[in-house]
Image (cartoon, rainbow, N blue to C red; front, top):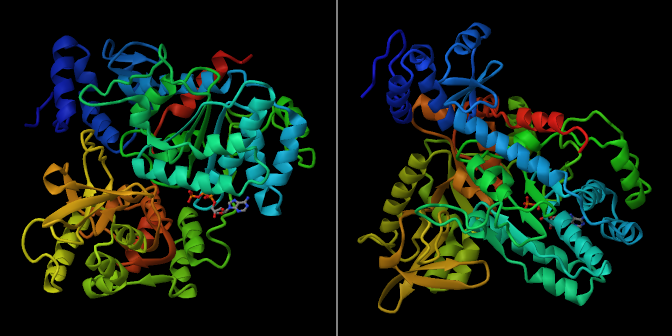
Length: 585
Ligand SMILES: Nc1ncnc2c1ncn2[C@@H]1O[C@H](COP(=O)(O)OP(=O)(O)OP(=O)(O)O)[C@@H](O)[C@H]1O
């Protein structure tokens, strides 16, 4: 129930209500000065922000609100830093993350055999379009922390495959054996996708010693949770500063999906000297939880004169602009811009670019210029018959009880919804239509039903986001799951929480790609529409390989492009603080 506090609006957020009860009792004198901000702070946190802005006058008043409000570095429930007001816990999280990034970035790395590395860099990134990848790999060879940032198909995985091969060669040549390498991603799907793409990229490398190829081909992807041994109910990491991960190199894909808590656990578990390579696309949706780690790290690459001298030995033909006063970690990022998937003739590429640039008119024009690759579907149009027709191969595989073929056909088309309730409504409607076509007119499950697991279940080794297909098994039905290579089935009674998933949310689609994507904008309240923004739209569009259909009005598309609300994060500030504290590092 809302609590009415003196001279402030009622507090409605459940966490703010609990905090209010404690703070008002423990610091009654200071409480009236902060009461008005608590709700805003917790609602901001729900939207992924680490702090709220206050005016200069408010900041002055809040400075008098000790012990509830403290300055940066104080141990207080709220931290005021200039005009930024943080929940103390969030402020500390970002400080810890910045300190760990700084520690990892400044650890010494094994020297590189420049001549051997230069020869590989030249041979493996031979064409003009690979120059950005080549620079990224060279920077990652010389530095222990690297973010390789770029849109779909820009070669992040290819760059990492070549880089890992180079690091292996370098380590073997220095008589240090093959390095211990970990591959992880926030979701199981993304981790499996990275491992597969990496294996393909490695196969293209000519002349790699067999031992190195075998070592790298054996790498498997896993979730960050599993890597850290974070199991419920405590979710305490098995690996941490005193028991670090036994790794020399860690690659983390889809880094945009890491929230602050998970990132902190991950960084804490890395010993100084372990190389960390983050892969991600800064334009994609940030994590579901608080934070936007890629926005904090992604920036223009800037190289000091000392680093440029080292680079010259690896890339003698390349000239770099030198900046000895660059912001922290500006040399630890490379942004790849040449997409091999979406070239100049690609409508999806044009549309994605227009969305990122906030160009609504150009986005609409792309639908005309690149039809039928890009298509509108009127929201009044009934989609079921068309979807059913598009899924013909899928339903044929289901009829033949061929699980592998059914999983392969699922990649042909996927319906994405901005919000979960829209996905649920779509699934219900499609289910009714399927019943008319003779699929599952009764019962909870039916052959061909697509499922998405919505909970981690360690007993069945099924994880939030895993996709299953219900198929006949013996006399009844079972749920099949694929790890990309093999299919396994489990009985329906053992299934953890799940939803029907002919349509899924854009959030859940991260890390996956489909030949054709249909996007449903939010159908409900203005609040829902307000959260349909540029990052969500971009993420949905770039899940499509060949065909994108917007099942809504042009005005909805334009409104989403105009909505760009980056998350407020103190991570850059915290990094600047680390750099200022240790200028000589
Ligand atoms: N330097 C290169 N030379 C030849 N082909 C390349 C090169 N870089 C990338 N490619 C090809 O482009 C495609 C996309 O590359 P890759 O998978 O490395 O990109 P990505 O950025 O990791 O994509 P995603 O974000 O979708 O995972 C692949 O088919 C890959 O073989």
